[in-house]
Image (tube, rainbow, N blue to C red; front, side):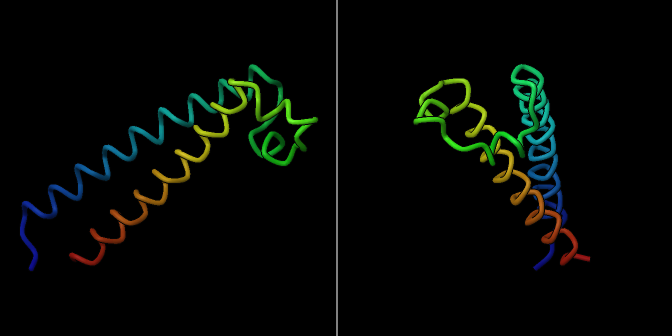
Length: 86
């Protein structure tokens, strides 16, 4: 059953996702600038004797990327839910 409140709630959740995605993209750009490589290159980079995974800044970068993927997926789900209401 479609209600205005349901649509408003989904819209709010979508907006929250967009804000989080924007923030995470900004954080990831800072990681890229700091380390002089793209996230794609970072993720493909082999672990150099385990040092990559043991560095807190690299672990944070990987976590931020994983979190970005999660929120992008959530946004897709909310957008799909809104489309189904129409």
